[in-house]
Image (cartoon, rainbow, N blue to C red; front, side, top):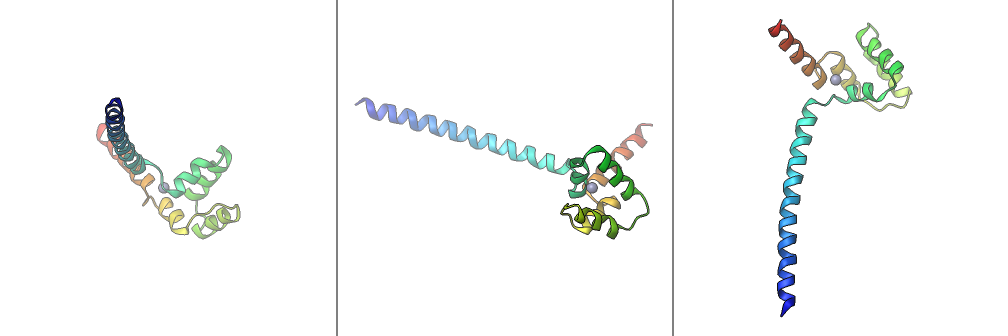
Length: 112
Ligand SMILES: [Zn+2]
């Protein structure tokens, strides 16, 4: 006679745990969405992943006058997999990083 009661408790615990678990999953997913919105584009992520010296050289190359085609070729030669469009859009500020920078600039401009 004790068994069904224990079983029901287990089921209730499972249901409670399951619900809490799915809720935490939702909050995790929502957090990931907002993180994704502010996280850098593929090119920005590559810049962040490189060591200081290399990333600085890459940023200088991107800000300089070198052809996107050449920068893209050098990245590919180094085994970095990225599309030329991603390089170009980051360079031109069309990517997520560019938008974030613009928004910061705009906010800074309004404040000063
Ligand atoms: Zn970018």
